[in-house]
Length: 132
Image (cartoon, rainbow, N blue to C red; front, side, top):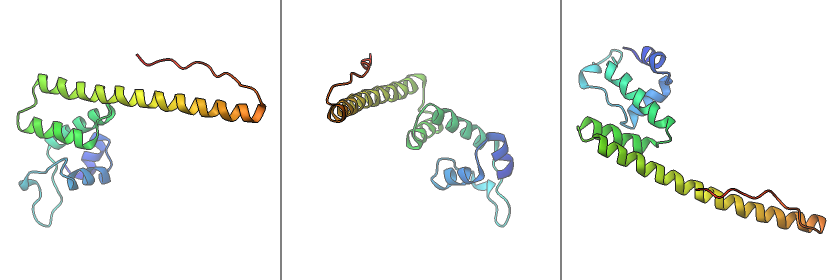
């Protein structure tokens, strides 16, 4: 299929598809790029783009998605490995939540100090929930 058809089918823009191709996230088979003609994208590329979208929507970076696609293509992505990859991602998100929670608490303390300077008395802010 041509890039316009692939774009309509997957919802990715032509520029995004070209970018993913440029960085090697998707790779066309050699027979798909004959000289002086339009590229013919096989259905497998549409499937790869669906995988890319799925994992982008789950918060994976392009580099993390590349690892998933490479392992998949090498037949090294079994259920255990995929669960490990997802567990690592969840752990990273938990760490980000903790960091953001700490930042929010520091900002609230700074806000309290500034409000105290402005008004001469402390205005209590609602208590923050501790992340579990």
